Length: 208
Image (cartoon, rainbow, N blue to C red):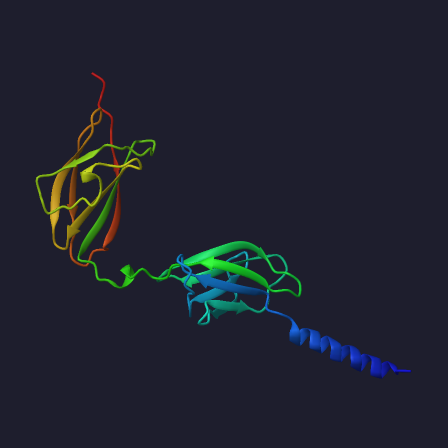
């Protein structure tokens, strides 16, 4: 017959084996949209307040493990500020079983590392109520402005995209039937933030 001391020793030994063999809470598999593993990308486990509970990096196969998770729901975030991040939320860890999470993440496209040669401006046409206005035309005699899309007309979301080289400035007006003309001055001083949004109120014509 085993004594109480011997039984306690066996139980402690067994519990120790169980604890040592407890699997990771999450296995995070990160790959690009074309199926290529993303190696050495930062992976974080976050609580409901966005605080980091655990972190790791993926290996050569694009896999990272997070060893533990609290009761309740957590989020897993892949990537960081420079290259963008993907977050999967409302995850609950399994008990004594690894939960596998597959995440598609296209790493830096390279634009963060290229020095811009000018200003990328987005003009947003809207009514007093905030509704976007399509079909507004940007008219200017200055050819230094480049309109990458729409030939200088606002799209369904009221946007006109304009590119200006450093040091350039242009004058023009915004025209659409049924609305008053709006004069616009755009400039691109050196050292200015390369990307800017401008909201422009378009006012209906007064009734005659």
